[in-house]
Length: 554
Image (tube, rainbow, N blue to C red):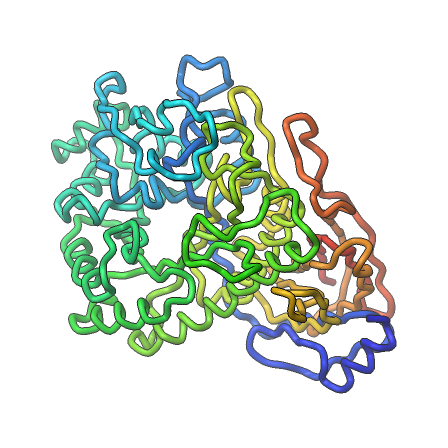
């Protein structure tokens, strides 16, 4: 759409305004798009836990990813990959969820404590998965050695300056096993037998784990319960757990995507006994994958390629990422029917893109996939949605940490690289702990074909946050290089004036561009320039870009 066409469309109300809750009249006069930041309309504090991660015993996530062993030639800290620890600290990673995922509800935490040589080997939950790459050998990724257990994971969190989030086994263990795991992690030194076992493993003082998931995907691999059945199980697990003076945060196994019925039935059943006081978060899972030809309910089918995709699939994936906004608002409304005070917050503890097998960096990396500039935009779109709903979303965990799905890192043996998604987390780190403020974005829509039918996509997406005199504005442009132009955009701040601006942009002219072991720096953030005209900031957002504007206020 040309500039004059956009102005005419804006003045007749034909352009989407991304406001979070309300619309205003667009005022674009000279530019292709306009962003208004309303500094006097706070939404809520952006919880650092929104920048969380997920690590499951799946393929190369733990073995070859996080854990290389103490005797490995790969630089390590007590067996934990050193480069991973350093990279996590750089992005101020907030929380890591472990040990799953579907693996969690087949896991006995006792298998992973004590001397490693004496720990049992068990078949991994994913041992028979149909997606295993051809020629994948046997190893700890199929038959878990349990060399990486509770203490190893909690040391990883300690080294990385992250908070642990442990997912308890509700399908195949008992509430007694759960509260004994809490005992092992949190009981004061020397007070219980399990505290003494922890000390024997090298950790005398309590780990002080706050976040606990009560099961995982209990509607599916976590037990195939009905919502009513799971509500009863949740109460059994959450009652009378030793707290040792801590404010434990229990997270319930929430819906699969848009299943509002699961949320409604669970909350209705929980309300019968007034259980909201024992729930901190309600977990929502949503994966983004190609829906061309119809989105299948089978999680292993209907997905496109991670690297070699046509233009329509570029738009398709970005459109699917935008679904997250509706999922948040819909489930929040259902939760409010029963929990009117909204004591329970949303926890999006699995999100990211999911592609068909074939781009993994090693055959042992089940569900491993490459990450392109498209994945960077999916990450930016999603994080901006979380910011715009900072009053609702208390935690989110991208799936997964390394060598799997929407990973920030790819590693094999001594090779280690960061993906474009990592760079988005690094750029967006300035939002952590800041106050989200209302943003109104008016921009031309992008037209494309969805299942051979016309469809459109928002031209610009973004969010803003304020900390003291620092305003952080992040914006994604999902346009295709060569097909969609850069969007010259006026950015107006209501309630402050601009003193200084620094711009960082992550973009690529090739929509399939990605980092690899051979070319680890193919995609990296670069500095850019913006101008200030009469108190209004002007910047041109390139297609296929994620941009951060760090604005110092006068």
